Length: 286
Ligand code: C5P
Image 1 (spheres, rainbow, N blue to C red):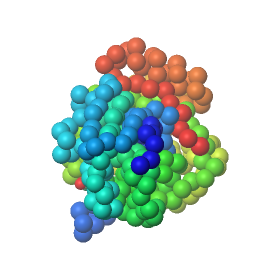
Image 2 (cartoon, helix red, strand yellow; image 1 turned 90 degrees about the horizontal axis):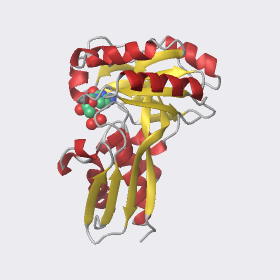
Image 3 (spheres, rainbow, N blue to C red; image 1 turned 180 degrees about the vertical axis):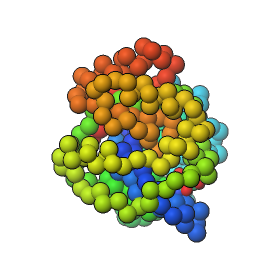
Image 4 (tube, protein in one colour; image 1 turned 90 degrees about the vertical axis):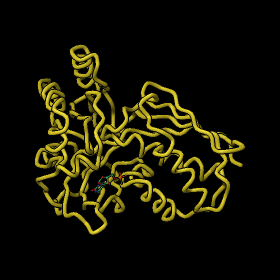
């Protein structure tokens, strides 16, 4: 058995998200630029006599029941695949809002796969782990990588973006959980997946491209959750924000700022005006 380990499960942000055709398997073709932030959940994994899970942290009470707990499903799926007993003790500190478009559950599942592979000393190739990740959710393979990347297909095609600029963002969630299938089911306008967006090393070029892109899920999410408009307005009303947009299927939105200080000041102003919203100034990995 491997040593106990604490894994960081960072928030995922879709800087843009373009949707294409619906596929025969019911999923949509996607084209998305994804980055990861320095806020996230924390998963502690240790040896155990059986599979045990507990959660603490501000959003632990909002986690669903055990059957749709992605951490437990990750452990059971990996153990079944490897032919080992799913024995581990897992403790999750849930810092990220649930069902919020920043991939908290997917990041937790990816962290569980990474940690349990080591704990159980499994000889599993990266491609196999990625296939297991995809079976758990379209965002889980991306969360295995935790680096800036372009995501295509249903979520299985991942192109790392080396030398990607680090960004200062403010993340804002109005406290309304959104169901991803429900948001997709209300989708009306699809940008398509053949955007010319290519690797970025330069922040200004990146921002110029982001201004020409969008999140196709923002309109259907706003129809389900009108508070998203208020969140976008709050981020736009700060004079130092650049691109302001929703991430994933919502309801978390982000604004890009020039500096960590600008982001910190904007986050403090928004949090003061909306004490019931989740507001964080973050830096994304470059
Ligand atoms: O894979 P995951 O469970 O995260 O997907 C949740 C739902 O989001 C799917 O059931 C589907 O309705 C929608 N989805 C989609 N196309 C994708 C990813 C997700 O239609 N590429």
